[in-house]
Structures are given as structure tokens and as C-alpha cells.
Length: 246
Image (tube, rainbow, N blue to C red; front, side, top):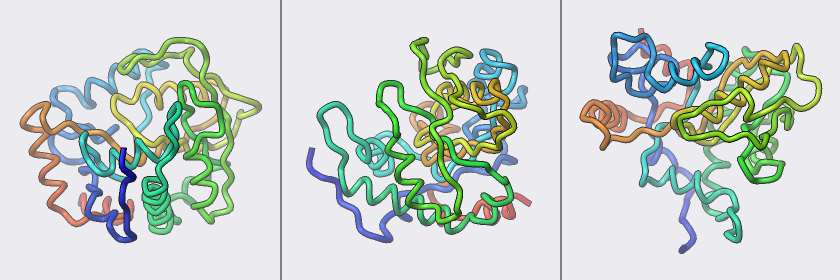
């Protein structure tokens, strides 16, 4: 693969503000399309909750992304995979996105009073996760990250959350954890990791993700919501996003 290209400032044109949790046909928990409005949350959130402890954590995504798409490419290639090295342009893009998001949302992060960040571990990659290293360099908030959860040998499918797929590491009881993942589709991985931390006695104060997957080709309503969001100028600030809901 040819190296990806990235120039400072280019990121805005490839990011899409997630829809409002109060918007019609949007799941207030994961900000995906809720195709069954008779239910309060979407099928994936209901499924994750039923497979865990009855709870599915709300997410705070930086941007929507599609496949194919530039953000999807950056999220794929900023980390190495088997014999493929991390792409430096993708790494620069993700670093820039994190820097700008943290700069725009310092008050939101501080208000959560997190003890530390925890990255959802990869299935096969050994720690530290590449995202952990980027966050350690990006925040400037004096908040550390910790590898406080790890994968176990238990199976975990794309739409199958598990109470046994992750386990907490060390003493987390009473800690306030800001959980972070790079991508979120069905949510089975991140929600299973959050469960493991809760089972260890921690409080997961929020689940922040860089890219929230949406498939505009799945159904017309998904295409409508994505196109409406794509037409809007990208907003970095969570506080400003929420102010537009009212």
C-alpha cells in the first residue's frame, strides 16, 4: 500500500459530527440508527446489555466514519499489523485528531474526574496499545493511562459481548476510569471491557471512541442521517454539540 497522505487542517474535511442523542431514530446510548423506535435503545445496545450485566455504557464518539473512508484508513493504518508497519501519515492524523479533541474538551474531561485512561485492548496485540502511547503524548492534562484490563482466551464475536472476554488487572476498586477505543461498531468489545472493569469495582465514567461506524448503504434512514451530519461543519466541542440539542 502507498503511504497515506495527511496535512495539518485536512482532518476537518474528513470528520463527521455524530448525531444528537435527542434526534429522531437515533439511539441515545451509542448514537447509531435506532431502527426500532418502540425500544428506547437500538438492537446492539439491548443485545450487549443482555449478554453482560444488564448495562450498556453510553459512548462519546469524536466522529462518525464509513467504510471506505479517509478516517477509516487512518484508524486502520496508524497501528502495525503482523508484518505491516504503522503508516506515519495515519499516525500523524490520529495524533492531530486526539490533540484537537482534548484541547476542545478539557473541561469535559476534568468534570468526569477520571483517575486515569484505559484503552480497550486488542485481541492479539501485546500491550501497550498504540493508542495508549498517542494519548499519553496528547492529553497534557496530567492524567495517566493504565493497562487496567486485558483480553482472556475466551471467544468474542462481532455481535457477541462476553462477561469472560476481559479481566481487570491490578486493583481498580473505587477508581474512576475513562475508557477509550479507536473504533466502535456493534460495541461488543468495548462494552465487554467496561463490564470487566465494573466487575473489578471500578466506575467507568465514560466511553470515548475516535470513530463510530455507520453504514449508509444498510438502510435509507442510515444514509439520510449520515448525509445530514456530513453537511454540517464539524464541531470538536462536546459542550457545543450538546447545546445545539436544545
